Amino acid sequence: MYGFAGQMLRINLKTGNISKQILSESFAKEWLGARGMVAKILYDEVPRDADPMGPKNKLVIAPGVLTGTFVGAGSKCGFGAISPATNSHADSSVGGHIGPELKFAGYDLIIFDDISPEPVFLFIEDDKVELRSAKHLWGKGSIDTEKQLKEELGEDFEIATIGPAGENGVVFACITHDFGRNAGRCGVGAVMGSKKIKAIAIKGTKSFPIYDLKSLTKQTEAIIQRTKPHPNMAPWQKYGTALFVGWSNDQASFPTRNFQSSYYDQWQTIDGERLVEECRVIDKACFGCWMNCGKYSRAKTRHGDVYIEGPEYETIALIGGSCAMTSIHDVTFANYLCDNLGMDTESGGSVVAFAMECYEKGIITKDDLDGHELRWGNIDDFEFIINKIAYQQGIGKVLAKGTKGAAEILGKDSIKFAMQQKGLESSGYESRWAPSMLLSFMTSDIGAHHNRSWSITVDLELGRDEIKGKAPVVVYLQHIRPIYDTLSICRLFWGELDVMPEEYVESLNYVTGWHTTEDELLKTSEKIWNLTRAHFLKRNGGPGRIHDIPPARYYEEPILDGPAKGKVLSLEKINAMLDEYYEARGWDKNGNPTEELLLDLGMKAVVDDLKEINLLGKPLPDGIPKVRGQKLKPKAM
Image (cartoon, rainbow, N blue to C red; front, side, top):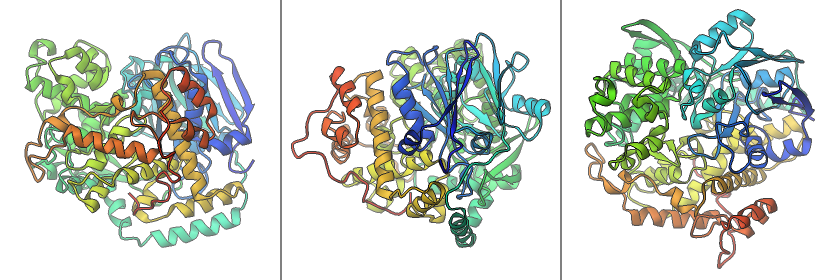
């Protein structure tokens, strides 16, 4: 089988049994890897009522078909589980080198079952696969653990770790790799911790077969030469994603003080220019990438210097803007704290910003904080509360549940400014003046995450106040963007360097010997999207629409200041957008997939499942749309 290593691992943590199995070619071709394989395994194998932190949940690790090839930035690896934050399907993608290393060791997939009786780490060196004691690592930070394992095993091992937040069940705990790369979203690190897995260490020296290496080499060389002089290459290499700080602020989409505003007058103190001038040590690249957008940075702190990869745009937005920081060193230090404690900087920043607003409004008091304070922009306050969260101490035990879970405990209408969707904190774009971006967050299958559909430029092109006509483009983006996670390549080459989807289809066929088309890939992505939607409904009930309504801040509170001052979306407009979206998806007015649609996608078992719980969509008067976003090909987003 071309493009795959051909084996998978099933590991029962309770018994210690490790079995190697042949990867089915039909399964590989249908689901491709990463997000696709994760979605199918979780849907089929995790019981509907399984506790996300219990033994019946699974942790799945899957690179994709293009991972480890030299297709541009073929570096990604998916980590998936039932999320403790959203109580449904979760997949989180990480770059770096661990995905390719897993395939070089000979494996396309790892499935962890049950819970280990004591802390362990998974050791893989080609055919040698062992669970080893991690008692000496338990309690250590993610970055510290990676450093220690490299000292123990060798620098050429690729390692993924969790920190205290994962060990202690913080619902937005992440999995860290390569000293600052993270499978950050949805709490996959909490699931890894619940299973008592401290780390995964991999060394691979094998190869896997490529169908047409000559054509793939020729294509890749041509793309390299074409993209080197691209006008976006130099700024991306210099600043990385931190380049977006000024742009986002200019567009009045930069979250400020827990999304109370969309414009930050101190943005220049925390932008890419400051990062490069004051903190950058060296540029970093993931496997197979010639963009080198990663920034390995040094922050000066009261504890001395600390080093971390980052901060990227999302971290700067959710820690810098949303917590109102005024020093790039403070943002970089906060990034380091989150990474070493093992928690997502997006959710972590949002939770701290939420807590700061609760303190501002008197919902959280000094008594709750052991006499401490939570002041906007104060790095000492940030450090205090983030440690409380990681170790589930005092008010930190409440905040460790995420903004939605914390608001449900704190009450006093705090749910209105818990900036999340389905339990996952919003990525770094304030969207009261960007309806398509809000729609993307509202309808995302895993919660408010920008990687599913970054559509803010649609608002710029079609009008910031316009709501009609945007839903079909969001549907298209929700098909095209996540397919990159399934193939396991970085989408920045598409979005920033104009390497087009049809070129990746050619690459896929060179790698595998298949004759796949772009439309077939889009339909695969649509199939996965409907599977994860059905999974959410199975676990959380319905109808779907009730889960797609955003926090009340979006439709009750006008933006406070800046270019978007006074902008707010009415609930009527939000529901109108959902109506158009459901129509474009072929779902009914309740936001539930229909039988006709699911059968068109070859998902008879899902039809039966939704019928059983009375959440199968009602038939549409005109039948399902023949084209559900696939043929719309807007400029890369």
